[in-house]
Every structure is written in structure tokens, then in C-alpha cells.
Image: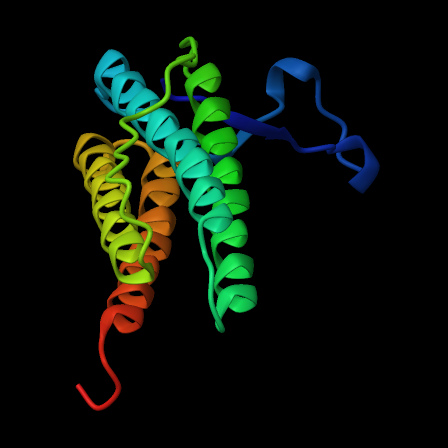
Amino acid sequence: MVILLYAVIDLVSIGVKKSYSEIRFTPLLETIMTTIDIDENAVILVLNNILEAELAGVVRYTHYSLMVFGYNRIPIVSWMRGQANESLAHANEAGELITHLGGHPSLSIGTLLETHCHDIGDILKESLEHERLALGEYHRLLGLVSGRNILLEEYARAKIAQEEGHVGEVLKMLRKPGE
């Protein structure tokens, strides 16, 4: 879909007397939203996968925050609750994009792995798996829209950067001092 905007030059205000038929229309912006041959159904499917993964993140991180015990509980709980809140924000963004494209947001929640291992290391390993899953979906989205839809491409790139940051944070938390 290509939308053209035109500016009508107000010739009368600058002292030129012309009829409307003689007024030249000037293109201001050739495309507002570049949507070149995207497979909207495939994009909506991936966005729904993202929505479900992020909703699973809300549940997962909230659960993890309740299962942390020990000396470092307070900062770890705070970090996990922050991750839960961020996952909810990401789910909302994905849902808004789904409806923007005319789709219907899923009511499902992604896979919730419960190993019943609540050691911080185990929790972080589960968290890492979840972050990598979400990262994979954002990469799938980018592959579908790259060079075709600026809104979705920028969204995917921004989320990939955030998720890569999360993966890096978790990997650092899993390292022993001095490694």
C-alpha cells in the first residue's frame, strides 16, 4: 500500500492569481508506511508466538521471583519482577501490532517449563532458554518484514537488541567470579 501526500501551494497568499485547475500539487512524502508484499498471515502468526512467549515470561518470572531464597533474594527478586513487567509490556506491544494488521491476539500462553529446581542457577538456566526462544521469534519476524515494513522491522530490531541484552545479562549471572 502506497499513500501519497500532497501539499497544495497557496498561491493566492503569495500574490499569484491562478484557478484551482492550474494549481500544482507537490508530493511531500511518497510513502508513509511501506508495506511491500509482506505475508500478513505469517507475520500475525509470528506476532502471536511472540505474544504467547512474552505472556509465558510474565508467569515464569513472577513464579521465579516467589521461589528465590537466601542472602541475595532482594536484588534477584527485584530483577525478576522487572523482567515480568517488561514481558507484559512486550506482550502488549505485540498484541497492538497484531490488531494493527487486522489480526486477533491469541489467548494462549507459551510453554511453561517447570523443573521444580529452584536453585538460582537452575532458574537462570530456564530463564536463558526462555529468552533464547523469544529472541528466535523476533528474528523470525525480522526475516519476514526486513526491507518491507519499516514499523515492524524497527520493532523487531529493537526487541532483538533488548532480548540479546537479556541473554547477555543471564549469561553473566551464570558465570562464576573470575571466569
